[in-house]
Image (cartoon, rainbow, N blue to C red; front, side, top):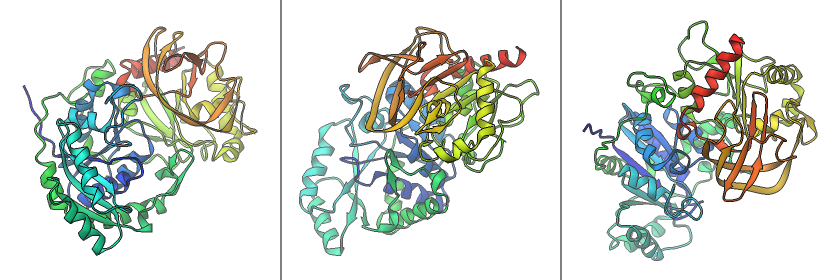
Length: 483
C-alpha cells in the first residue's frame, strides 16, 4: 500500500461570517510568500473563494465536495490537487459541523477533515466576547472526538487588552492560540447577492485585498506553529485521482498539478488551456471572463484527458467563438450584472445560436442557461431557448439529486447525479417540453431544457462525481465535427 504525506490544515469556523476566507486566503499567501508551494482547496460547491485562493497561491483553487463527488473521492481529489506541493490549506464551509441539509455530517467541513485526517484550526470571531470564547472553543473541540481541533485563530480582535483577555480565557481549554488577527477594513472583500465579488471582476482590488489579508495573517499568526501543525497530519493511503481514468481514457500519473500556474480566465482572446492537440481533436469552447467565472478546475482536465482541445473565450469581448469550435460549455457566473454588455455583443450571440441550431453539443449551467434564453431582464440574449430570464427577490440554494430524463451530451437517460443550485434569477417557463433533469430530492420537479444538442439547467454538477460526462461530451463533439 502506497502512502503519501502532504502537510495540511483545515481552516474552519463556528459559523459563516467568522472570517474563514480572510484567514485561509491570507495564510495561503503568507505560506507562498515564504517560498512554499501551496495547494489551495475549498470545502463545498463554492466557486468564488477558490478564485481568491488561486490568486493567493498561483495555483488552481480546487473544491472538495463530498455530496457532489462522493466521500470516497475526497482524498483522491485532494492528492491530485496537492501533488508536489509543500503544504495544503483547506478552507471550510459554513460552521464546522454544518453539512448537507438533513443528512448529518455529509459534506461538512468536519466530514472532509476526517476524510483527510487533517488537523483543524478554528477561526473565531472574537469581536463581541472575551471569557466566553473558551466555552465556545471547548464545545467545538469536544463535540466529535474524530475531529482534531488543534488550534484557534482569534479574528477581529479589538486591542492588546482584548487579546490578552481572550488568550487568558483559552489557557485551560487545551487548544492553543495560533494567532490573533486585528480588525482592519483593508481585508474586506466586497459582496453582493450571491456572496463575494469574483476575482475576475475586481483585478487590482482583488490583488490588494489578498495582499492585505496576507499582511494581517503574517502580523498576527504564528506561521511556524501553523506549518508545524500541518506537518503532523498523517500520510494518506488513497490513490490520487486521475482525470484520464475518470474520463475513461488510460493515462499516466497525470503530472503534478501544483507545478502549474493557475489559468487566468479573464484576459479575453481565444486561449487554449492545454498543450497543442492533433489537428482532428475537437475544440471545446469554454466561456470565461467576468460574466462567467464559475468553473471547476477538474472539468478542463477531464475534457483534455478525453481528447479535446479546450479554448476559452470571453462573451463580453470576443465577437466570435474560437476557431473550429465543435462544442460549447457555458458555466455559472453573473450575466445579470453584465446583461447590457452581453446583449450588445450581437455577433457572438448569433454565432452561439447558429452553433446550437447545427446540433453541436452545448452545455449550459445557471449563468449559461440565462445567456441562452431569449432575454435577460429585458435585454436580448442568444434566443436558443424558448424562455425569458429575470432577477427575482428569492434565493434558490441547496444540494439536489437529479436524473437525466433523456439521452443528452452529458448523460444517458436514467443517469443519476448530485448537484447544487445557487441563484436569484428565474426563467419563464422553468422547464421545457423536454426538461434537462427530473429532480428527485429534496423535492420532485422538472427543470431546465434539452433541445437537440443543447442541455441547459440551473443545476451545477461536478464532473469528477459524474463519471463519463466529459468523455460523452467530447464524443458528441467529435461526432459533430465528422457529421
